[in-house]
Length: 295
Image 1 (cartoon, helix red, strand yellow):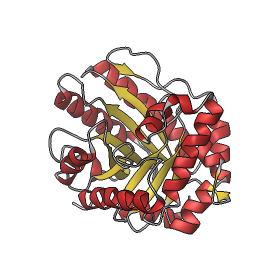
Image 2 (cartoon, rainbow, N blue to C red):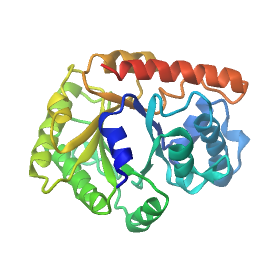
Image 3 (cartoon, rainbow, N blue to C red):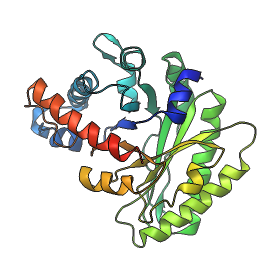
């Protein structure tokens, strides 16, 4: 594991940019960017367009390690290049931004109020490529729809099982058990998740650490015990459908929690903007998220 990158993730000031939309969420991301579905005929063209958007964003002057600590990449983005250089190498060498990659293969059908991750049938080969390309860590997402104790424990067990395999490869796992912002009795689900995560963290052996990516909580500083846990390198928050303004307002009330936003980060960025307009809006978003991550 790159120790300089580890120091950045452990104590750097800033936030994580989540640019890891996969096949299912890409059409929506492109639509928000101003590209309708009739602009492409197949997945290959769709992924080419989303990569052009990501390349524009990552090569933009305001997108730098001064405020963006890390970026979570989609697998295809990791395998492509930015300005003629491997994406991960570009991020670290040119921007001093730590590269992560999304490794899950989507969500299974809902059961016991949650959606577990589908079996990761290509994890070993993906981790091999990630190590070869200089990726620091990984991210994988589950989804909580209801405050169901059995379901939440199953999600946490699965996250830690895969997280252990990833850590054994020398990569830093980000565990992302997202709680839906539309969850009935979300505060209860949040609290149940914190309890389940705390139990598993206490059981970790050796010097193993993980990162956690969690939905912005309804109760301020709910994640303080996780942030302070010796087995946690960093706790980051996802915007989960909240607007940029809403996300930053909630984030700023939670001490030690930093952002890992996707939709909120790219809010207001469109394909028809000039490069100057694009960078100005991106800088405004980055500044707002950065400020909220400093509390």
